[in-house]
Image (cartoon, rainbow, N blue to C red; front, side, top):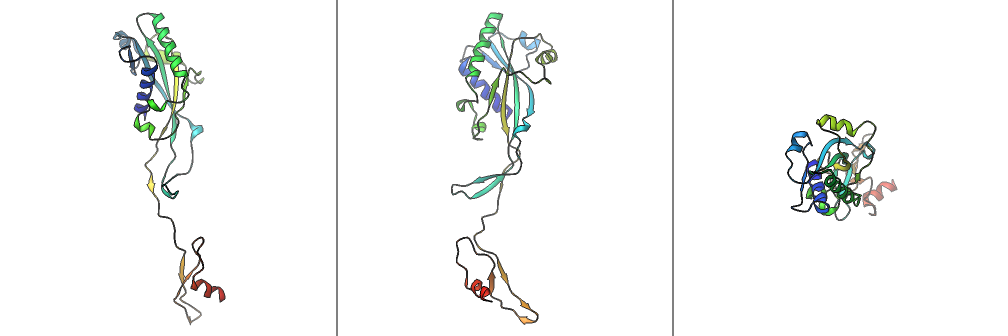
Amino acid sequence: MIHEVDEAVRRVLRGGVLPDGAGEVAFEAPTRDWAARRNAPTLNAYLYDIREDVARRERGTIAERDATGVVVRRRQPHRWFRLSYLVTAWTTRPEDEHRLLSAALGCLLSHEILPAAALPDALRALEVSIPLMVAVPPPESRSIADIWSALGGELKPSLDVVITVPFPVSPSYDVAPPVTEGAVAVVRGIDGVPGDSQPRMLRSAPGAAPSAGDQSEEKR
């Protein structure tokens, strides 16, 4: 799902900040070598962290029903992961970078979830809302300055964008068809007395009248 989220981010930034021909959206690590090769205004969305959102973890199985409400398949619940992007602007002048970064901030702030129009087919098929957060302070265990040190570059203005996306755990599996008949037992004999071989229904289907065998058994 990561590459689908990349594509959704690209579509959001393209549509709100960089229309075709106005610049580029890149996902490479913004190292010194990468920056030296830039020759057009660029928004870089570098995926630097992937962590499970354990507060969203569910137990058990999820039932999938047909049009009549009958359970036909079951699956494990999705696991949700937080994808953290470091969004930076790259131009030849700091003023232009700030202007571009401001436009990106305004664009992202207008969306609390990834818009449906920006979702690739694989994400749209999940039929869930995908939360988007921008410029929220990162946890104490993670420092933006440390990220720039790891990249070998100088500290640069950036937006921390976090997208929480579900990941399917395993394929769904078919379930047995619903029970439509009651359980049946056959009496073979008690204490040497020949038994009645007529089947006895122990429990009728909901709403069904007792069978003749049930009635004779109750009379006994």
